[in-house]
Length: 121
Image 1 (cartoon, rainbow, N blue to C red):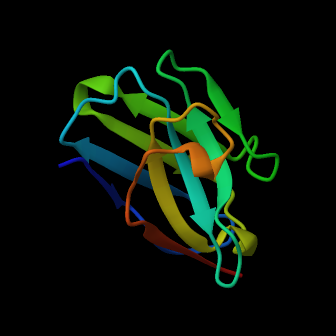
Image 2 (tube, rainbow, N blue to C red; image 1 turned 60 degrees about the vertical axis):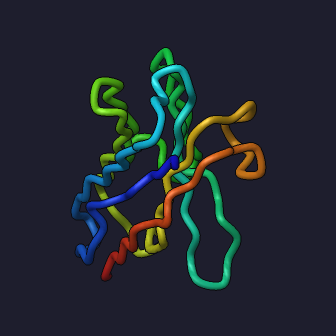
Image 3 (cartoon, one colour; image 1 turned 90 degrees about the horizontal axis):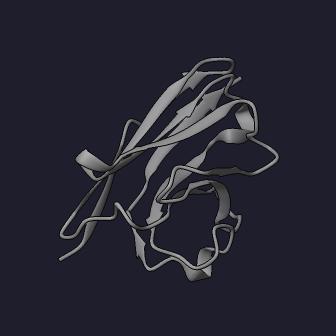
């Protein structure tokens, strides 16, 4: 059974940092793209960042320059370093794996349950 488990969310003040982790189990994703999406209350789930199996990275314009996605294939994990956090970054952050289209949430096969990130202003 494939599982993606996120951790590292929490409450942080605006301008602060958090590092999210997503650990995969049940199969290896070293040859698959992995990504982070987020969903704020009352809004649709939106793309945050993705990383190809080769390490190429892709970001939403709203987080470019503040967030960094990375992966450790030996640990079957993906990470999201979030700096200079803003109140509008408040959301549930979910990791996803295996896709044919980095930006399209409909194309991802596997999803985690998510971790809450709350940024206070």
